[in-house]
Image (cartoon, rainbow, N blue to C red; front, side):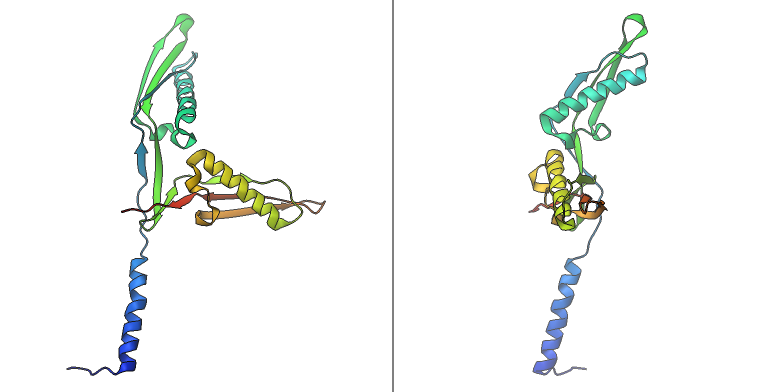
Length: 192
């Protein structure tokens, strides 16, 4: 059975098909975190300690400090490091010392389609007091952007692109306000 379409009905069919195409294209999938690692192996020794547990902790802290100076804070998460290795030994008077090595890594998560890339962790920013509540929120977002730049770089510091935003403000008796914001930094990464 064939149906003859008039100009109006053909236009309606075309409009319906155009509406449904973007709905399909906007399907969102959550992907597992992706680990990006540096090729350089970082080696550090920590200070001596009475127990092996504390000797390892001191070595990890020293490793994190070196990685932070060299690559930035976003690379300092020891659980994400590639090929972690401890070499510990006893020294005089029952003390222990450890030397560790690993390649620094960071995690990123793609949350909303193939182009929006978000960090794994949320960042908080707290502003200074202001007379107007909107200005206090603005100061908090500026503090948030500054912290994001120190952790992840300039490409993630746009508040409007971030996910899971929360804003909390405190009102004081003198008529001023102080706000704090927290969100997950994101940017648009063009994947070819």
